[in-house]
Amino acid sequence: MKTVLTGVVIAAFAIVPWPAGMGEPLAHAADGDVRKGKAIYEKHCVLCHGPQGRGDGPVGKTINPPAADFASAASKKKPDAELLATIEKGRPPTAMVGWKGQLSDAEMQDVLAYVKSLRQ
Ligand code: HEC
Image (cartoon, rainbow, N blue to C red; front, top):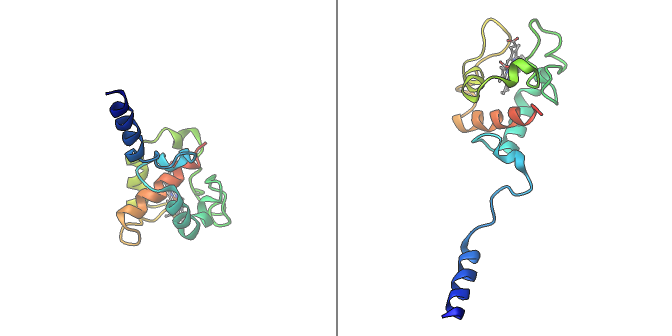
């Protein structure tokens, strides 16, 4: 009986997958994939929002209003849904354009996850 039980326990451990993203806590910042989001960010967002998301990219700091600083207290308070809506629809009349159509829903989730990882 005891050996059977041990076998079951070992089997249970064997089939439980290693928790995804162990050692990369940022991977779960939102539903999106932070790594994919980083690539999208570097292609489409970094010129305005800057490498650290402070709104100080070469373009972002020259426009008025400047690109949003994701680490600001005001931005940190905004829920995912609000940030996602801004990514989708933009914020007229600022330079922030909507990305729906250019990015898929999954890509917008990914880039949101990356944006949130820049808040720390
Ligand atoms: C042309 C410059 C520019 C580009 C490119 C750009 N943004 Fe923005 N973004 C802005 C500006 C300007 C604002 C609004 C700032 C304000 O309201 O004061 C903004 C606001 C935002 C906000 C809202 C932040 C908040 O706290 O309300 C999010 C989220 C955001 N951008 C994400 C992105 C993402 C993701 C990309 C790339 C897919 C991107 N932006 C590309 C200029 C830009």
